[in-house]
Length: 386
Image (cartoon, rainbow, N blue to C red; front, side, top):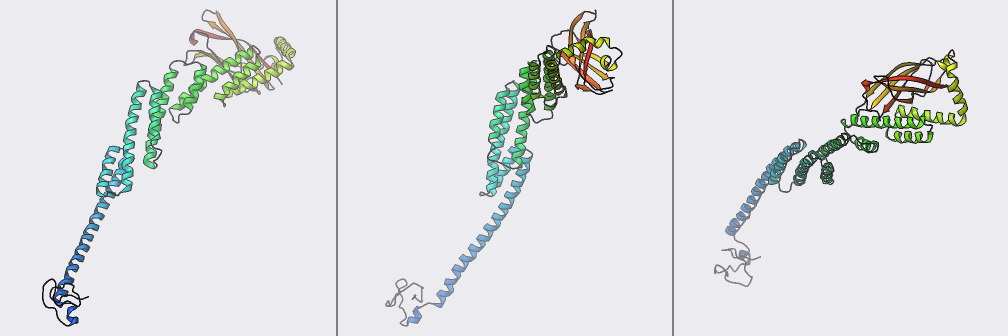
């Protein structure tokens, strides 16, 4: 390409004068190619530009690295605050991290989570106030809505927050159950409360669960024994089966179930034999296995937590062979010796081997006297031998 040797302007081959500086151009085409002075001046300028760009790039790179390192430091501090559930402080640190590094995606995500966490904490405080006012269902609804906001998040911080939510939910459920128990609910309500409290994953729920289950067992045992004493075997069995739904491992109910089955079979197949055995047992005093097979070790009366009279006792087999279906007939007497009521209760386990001990227990729901003012009196003990 041809240039003016004086000012460096591009020129055409047929031009005689420079169109910029107006000087006469050399006739020799070689002298029009470049100018040494111009070349000397021309290469320095881009060099300076290049050096400036490189220097600026270095400064920018260093600045970005410093900001990136600071952003990571602030982010790590924020994470520690999150694990300590100090969400407001963590939010401020994440915002500072973003200020140092605008494209810090983890910080943006964590900042979004902090807004949710702060909102959830506020909701939990609201739920606490609602529960204190007795609005348990509304409080639980607020908690459930709060937990649903965490569906798009995961990690240890989220797990910690979910654990906090779960603990508060359990605490409110326990308060609700305890309030219901204070109203002395009937058996149907007790069954519902048992499922409610059994679903609460908390150590504090365990004694409440046990208490409700024991109430159901006592009620079931008493009602089933009443039906059994009236020879209503089917009704007695249905009552026990229903009770076992709520206390499947209850030795007391399982033993009573066995007793009912045996009593039903014996009644249907050998009713006359049972009557004769009961009528002649008093005349066979010397036959230990038939007339003196049971030794009464103890019989006591106490009050349960609901103020009902509870008759408890223990017997021991002194027979030489196994005996079963042991029935204790007793009366409850006032301090003046007046008879309040009589009752029959079966010993569990159903079958006793020689020298083996058994227990019996019955809850009277319809007697208003206190246990200390009532005395038990054993009237009769009957049993069967194989």
